[in-house]
Length: 129
Image (cartoon, rainbow, N blue to C red; front, side, top):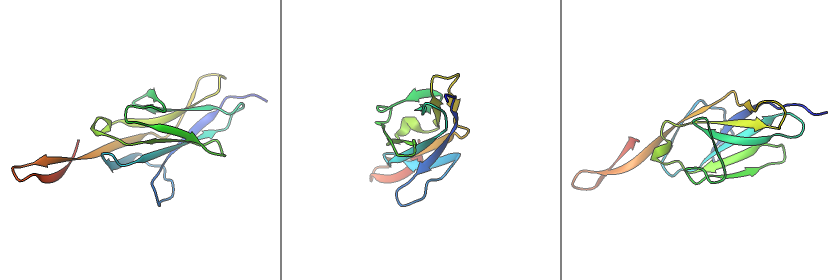
C-alpha cells in the first residue's frame, strides 16, 4: 500500500561517539560533520533531501558535501563546514511523491570556530566566525 512518509529524524554522528539528536553543534572549520537522516516510513521509500537554511543541499553542497545511504534507509550527509556555515540551520526532508514533503522535527544550528592569525608574532587565536 502506498502512503506518504512521516517526519524523518535528524541526528549528528561524530567519530568514536554514538549518534545524537542535537539542536546546536559547535565545530572547528574544516572538521568533518556527519548528519544522518532516518526516514519516518512511507511507501515507496522516500527520497531524503538535506537542507541548509531551508534550501536543498546535495552531494555537492556549499561546503563540499557528500551523501550516502545505509541498509535501514538512513542517509548520511558529510561535509566540512567553513566560515560561511556559521549560524546556518540544517535539517532534512522526506519526499515520496505523495503529498507534501515531510520535514524533520529537529533542526541543527551550526556554530563554526575558525583559526585566524592575529598580532605581529603570528599568534593563533580561535574565534567564532
